[in-house]
Image (cartoon, rainbow, N blue to C red; front, top):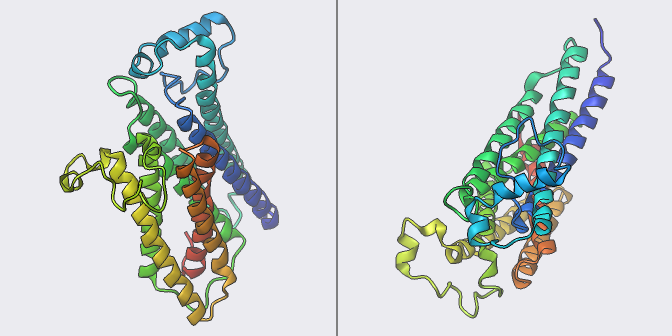
Length: 339
């Protein structure tokens, strides 16, 4: 049976663009959930329940009583009122509700595409990878939350970094698929893959270090720039601390690594710009990435100097999406194959 390819592509574009926006929204709400210390307010993994928030006082008290059992309440928020609990509850509830919406909005159109367009020559099952990654993201989300329910006052910053990194990878994959569908032109002269890969690794490291800082509240120390309270190195650590197995639990060292990685990344990007000019590639292809990097640096500095004000910290996290998306465009234009 012949099925109009234009209709399929039209639906596919709309679906991917909407899914991209929904996941960006979920990342934003997730970041605010972390910044408001709300992530542990719901202590159960309500996979099929919890779609509606508590509707009466008994339900509210049940959630609150469960929260009172975990270390975060006992060691940090002891004496919190039910009204105060409702504020942090709704942040986590909104994050989980968005996750459900994303999951359904991913799966249902995929089923529709499979039933309606499976005979179309352009149809592909590869988009189910997105749904599988979303499912994995849900599991990792609970894996992260569970790390703060028994012995710790907060979630593991390692698990937090995995949760954020997978969300950003999902966005990059969706954006790549969109570039394929729109058949964006490739570079006629290819850039060195080693350089592009090195920049990608540095961006990934920055995201991981940023997640570590968020998980360790490491942005609340050394709130000066470009120095660290008057020195280049943090003054509350020693050489032995850099060699310790507890290296990645030290917020001062993590903040130092986050700064140094940014400087190294900036050097590589300057060299990338040099190649664009010398190879006579269209400079507009990198200007968006340059702007995203400079904006992200500015937001990072403002976040630090402000003592991690929520509005700046949230924008800084969203800035990583802008950086990655603009860089994925360069990687796509330099590639030879489709995913």
